[in-house]
Length: 93
Image (cartoon, rainbow, N blue to C red; front, side):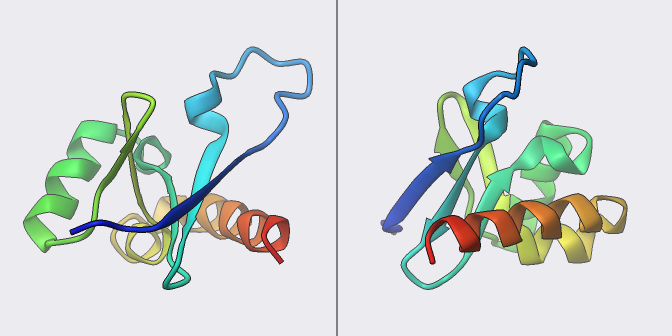
């Protein structure tokens, strides 16, 4: 399955944050993908997403997952996930 994505990245604002950690994507169906590491453990989140049949996107050697799924499965990451999602939607508005 191919997903049509538009990528964006936020400025590091003087911090040393890798590009992959500052990147997110908007899919043509409106789904926002953010770094899986937002959940805490990238590998654990990827395993859970795979088990749930959730789309996983790879970019710059890292996994990105849908924000809606992340908020549901990792409530501790809900606020950050929502903040990133809003920023992505504003960027592409």
